[in-house]
Structures are given as structure tokens and as C-alpha cells.
Length: 331
Image (cartoon, rainbow, N blue to C red; front, side):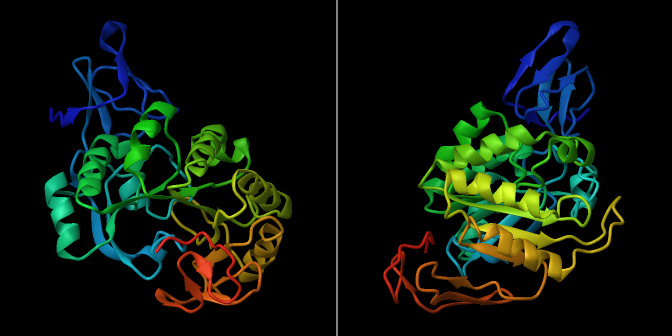
């Protein structure tokens, strides 16, 4: 049996079982079995990660594709993903890799990955496409080396991680986009297999780090999380942490096990106005329309976006060029 490398954050139990402590599932795993993510396996009483260095997807992407609109706008970043996930979202947009751990992969060592980022003049590495936090051992090693080489580390994640491993990752992190899929525990339990509270705690913890850019995304699914009250609660929660957090409302399209109709643009437009009652930087994703950044004080156009083409218009040195308002954008 292929072992991979020994996992971090687990404890050994009786009868050869182990308890994984990486994420809130805290899976108890019998000999020869994997946890909920399908990629951390108990081999003879030792927990192994089977995905160290296994890359299912790799590309140079615009940073806006993550989506991150306030972190080095207009730049490109080397983006990588693996297989497996700590959730089993019935509407997963990347289910062919997140829910199929046997999907073909190629091996990249941390040294090879960081060298590749330098070769393509990337601002850093984005751990994305599937859930990067189940890839903890690898992304930590890559992030540490990338930081030493002057590169940025970006995480596009569901936020489902225990506090101790998160604390270890924070010093080598530069930006996060965290999926807040709903403000309902019932939604999380039935449609993702996870729980809401740990995700909120991760958002609160990352949001407390001024050095780290935090943006949050909700995939809006008609009939499930598209009510005015739900988006109002999410916006209020984010504003209670920091009312400058950029918030993305993305359109859903039928995928995997879900056949609900696509999200109407009118729904996103309505919810955007509700979120803007609490948050000045609200963006729409997966649809056409205005994705520009405006000054919340004088309403000057700061950054113009047409697709993934970006033009900085009235923004300089962290402030609006027209009125001097401080704007949370890192360049």
C-alpha cells in the first residue's frame, strides 16, 4: 500500500485506530481506511497523507480569478490544486477533482513549485481549485519556502480547519478567500457535510490579522441561500469583524448533484444592494456586470475591471487619489 508521508495533527488510539486533528471532523480512522477527505489514511496505526506533492491542476491565473480584488490587482499568480476535500458539497463546481481522489496527478516538490513561480514571474503561489487545507503538510512546506524566496501565499479555502494548524499556517499566509456558503447550520450539515461554526471562527481569526488580506465569497443558490435575511446576516457578521472586508456574491450554475436553476442576475443585484448596507466593497462573480472598485467616500472609480483586464484609475499608495480616503487594497 502506498503510504505517502506521515501526516501532522493526529493522535494514536487503541486497536490501531487514529484520530485526525487537522479539521473539525476529527475523524476516527480504522486501519487501512481514510478520513472524510479520502486522502489521509491509517496505515498500521500511523496516519499518512497520500497527496503530498500531488498536483491535479496547475495554471497561471489572474489574481482576480481567485477571486481576490484587493490583493495586487492586475497581477498573475501560479495556482495549484490537489484532489480530495473536507466537504462534500452537492453543488461542487470542481467535483471531478475534489470528490475523486484517484484523479490523475503530477508530482511537484516544494523546490520545483517555487522555482516555477519565479520562472513565470508570479507574485506567489495560490493554493486553490480544491480544498488546500487538507493538503496541509505540502502547502505549509511550499508556503514556508515561498516566503523565504519573497513570494506571496494565497489560500482559497472553505475555512474548515482546527485552530492549532491554522495558527501554524498564519505566519506564512498573505491572503485568503474563504467560502462562506451559508449562514445556516442546517445548510452546512445537509449540503456540505460540514458545520458552520468552525468556518465563522476561521474568518474571525484571519480577519483579526491586519497583515493578511481577507476576502469572502458566497455562491448564491436559488431557493437555498438567496434570501435577503441570510445575506443581511452574513454582511452584518463580516462588518462586525471589519467593515472593509471585500465580499463576493457568485452565481451558481447546475453542477454535480444539484439541478436548481442558475442564479438570476436580478437576484445577485438585489443581494448586492443589501450587502452594501453594511459593506462598501461588494462584487458579483460568474456573471457580467460592474466589478469595479469605487471609493466609499467620494465614489471615484478606483479600479476598473473588464473581465480579467484591470486598470488602476484613481488609487495610489493605499488611498483614493481624488479624496485621500484610505482603501484596503494591497499593491
